[in-house]
Image 1 (tube, rainbow, N blue to C red):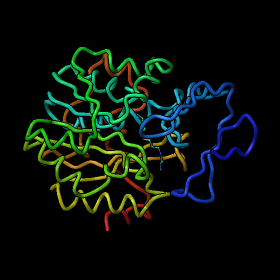
Image 2 (cartoon, rainbow, N blue to C red):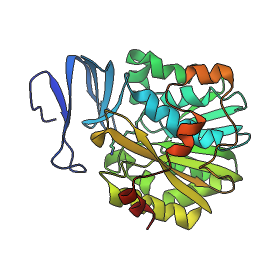
Image 3 (cartoon, protein in one colour):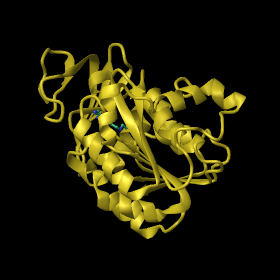
Image 4 (cartoon, helix red, strand yellow):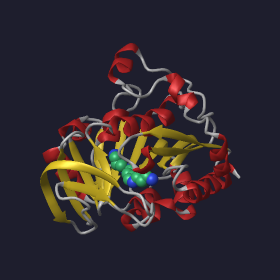
Length: 283
Ligand code: SPM
């Protein structure tokens, strides 16, 4: 890790050269090496706890809701009756917390490669780790790209909450992975993945959209505003075998709507509208 200033964490990465996001912290609570990656957890001055894997920010308590809500509710509200849901990655539990808000869901599998991430979240980030407490959740500690080979036509929705395409997350950005994942979906299933920033990583997003175009009759990219990912934005890629992911077919009930801070039916639809230059991801 490179520190620009003492008491500040600075995120420097070859994937976004020449730009660094820095957060001031009060305490560095965890610094450990798991079998797969370096895990750090900070108590920041202004953004609550911050989880960092291999020196890349995964979430802060202050703004994680933006990412977790959109990654989850865009695919789930695009499906009329999602019952079986798989989350690949997502060891902090935040996506599970959001999936559990859908009463129609009967079974939630999570496949996380690194059990240590779950342990750190459970000890230090209860606001996201609460997702593991839902009785519909089954935890699988395994490589997602291997796990899905064992499931055929089973899931209504699969969400790939991965880190970036460097390190353990690299296999989760290949055509081979998404082809296998397609076979794990029911014939009307939907996938959503962590699809990076259309602004900073245009080529990466473009290659994700190219893969989705080849595999799914309906696909798209929904942008998400979030201060603590580089450039202040990220996106979710959607691939669907039947339903139009740009227009939700269900809406949050009153109780669920009160719990949501980012997702609305209007935000769902608007997220697919990109600035003119951003449309290059579909070329
Ligand atoms: N459940 C939260 C896990 C976060 N997974 C995505 C992390 C991405 C980090 N890098 C963002 C780079 C954006 N271009």
